[in-house]
Length: 368
Image (tube, rainbow, N blue to C red; front, side, top):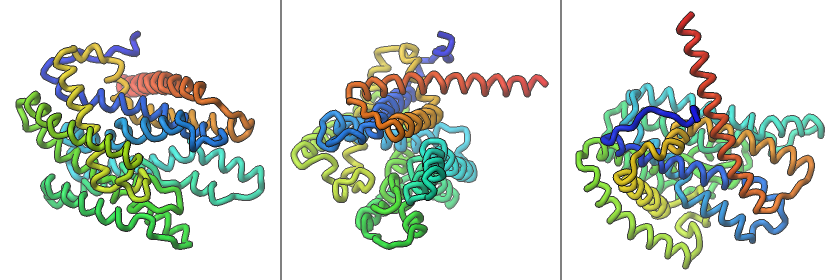
């Protein structure tokens, strides 16, 4: 139980804990999604199975997840001790490079071993090593934010720039069909392509960071948080309901180009943000009724988000490489969902152990 203890919470600080709950809810949904998404693909006809659809689309696209993390990252800049543009750029570079470290330990190492055994390295091996994902986007987003902050741009102008980038990205998505692997690799960092593994491209996804930055400025300078979140809820709830109803009629992600989650439009981003804002507002009012100390576990989970994410992908990569790829085992969805829940617990506990070991090492260095 010592692992679950954190500092005492003050009632006046509850205004920030709703972000912790949003992120912890999102990481739980994301980890279960990743487990089912990756290991479920080995089941024949998985594309038409509702169990796969629920994990991939409902948990993985709509319920917080990546867009909630990026929105929260933008907001957290105003609560960070390192708000200087140069510090944002430095953090961005580190996070971007960390993406390649994760690539290696998640799938790259297994792709290299497979290539050595087979005697050839296929294109998928390179993609496993340098594929663009959320860490690469987060790094570029921080670098861009640091640059825009360095030229003294106000948050509203950064938000406008993100809208322009989103619009450009929407029209340019899928347009590049060249044969150059290197050029495709560079382009996919900024605009979604269907060539090299391309996920969170900067032009499509920076809108969440920019809006988070804009919202964080408002939040920090608003004394009456209850009134603010009531207004946010009154605006975002009808948008969310309309978005869900229309998505049910016209199909999931119907506002994204070719229905691709990563090639979202401004309107799709608005729909996803409405979900984040509704959840954030509900968590705020929940924390007005229930003391934040009751949510210690989820708040600690949120504070260890990066390590939990990295650990979970390393575990998933190992399980897929050994059990699915080598042994040819096909898991049923009930087992996969259980494995996803276990993954959440294991990743959390390992992250706490890592944090404690790191703290002990730093403490020993200080005493020497």
